[in-house]
Image 1 (tube, rainbow, N blue to C red):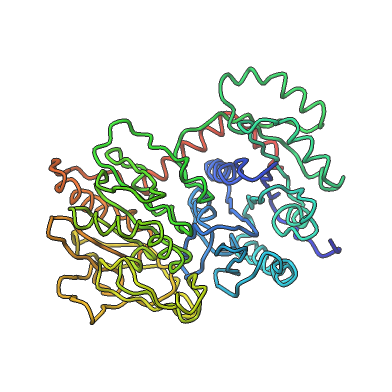
Image 2 (image 1 turned 60 degrees about the vertical axis):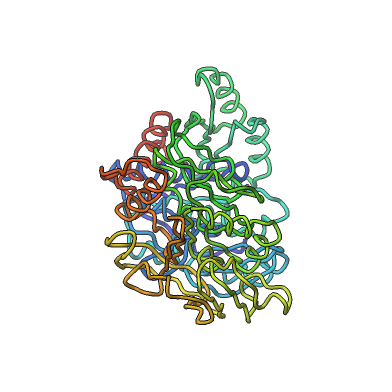
Length: 509
């Protein structure tokens, strides 16, 4: 890396690096953010580059990874795209959408990314760091790395790990996942591949996801410290709290933590699923068991079905048709089922999808315009630019209540005049945010563009009561605990568990 002017923050930044992907960096940063907030500090999360389709929209309409938004909540501050200045949103076939400071600026292949986007990416990272410190000069940045910091084929082009650490002269923590096995080799191998000036930045090691008696690792801790001359500042036990997975591949590993659910929900596991944190509020409902649907099956065992958001709606609709799931969903609707689609799921529930600019997974001319599932008389046309904004509205169905959320989508959806649209009604006062209709058997088919719809407690309670009524369960009249309060409680619990086993204060000077 060429010599360049470095930032000298008032408070020493902390950076969490990992020996591999999935070592627990994101959760560790989240916990540290809340710990420092509780200590009266002014923590701010930062991840220079993230690759994820699980996104959030900030108050300015900028996209950012949901994991950095959650870390901002842990800090007690509003999320901002400056906290995640580069977001790569995978589209399949080794291509990704490039988002800089919340705005989509292009499409890249993996092969061309570093050639075309490395220099502008580093500039946008420095710009974001400068802006954060100008706005909050007394803050302490809590930085998250990505993958491993010593991928030797990529290290000269790495925007996220040691380049940022050296630029800020951050105190770095190396996190390793003992659940994977080989923890000693992970640590020693990672450190050996670092340059001497990089290794000097590593001020502490965390052993993550330890099962059993922590005292059994006493000799292991002693060996690591003797071999590396770096203190093991924490041995974190296996934690069972449900937190959003960073990667959609982890979704199938999520298990319900409730033993006696009354309602079973099925979520279609689309190949290009996005914004799966939409369902975290349902994960925390004791009455609901969630299962992921990955192939054609009889759906009648589910009390309601969710079709989630998609990064490639045309591509995923083709998957639904070829897999037989489109027909399964139609049969389920004819039964008495409740179906709700969110964003891309709304679009797929309609009659037609048209993709003239090849933005949503079309590969051939024959795929420019395809049929949807056909349960709602709606047609969607995709354009070159997408819409990202926060939403404040009021619902008309299943109850009247204030609604907050956000939109991230390409395309405009409107009533299909070629179909019978008399039975369809708007869900919200903003008429283009969602529609629903009732079927003959007592079920409902609904779709909305609002991500975060289930975070609206009154709306979520009333929708669940629709399901309960259909299943002849007693209507729940008690108000559930606000999901945002539950999320705060989870963040506090996470921080408390880490704080019991982590000596973070030694790195704050």
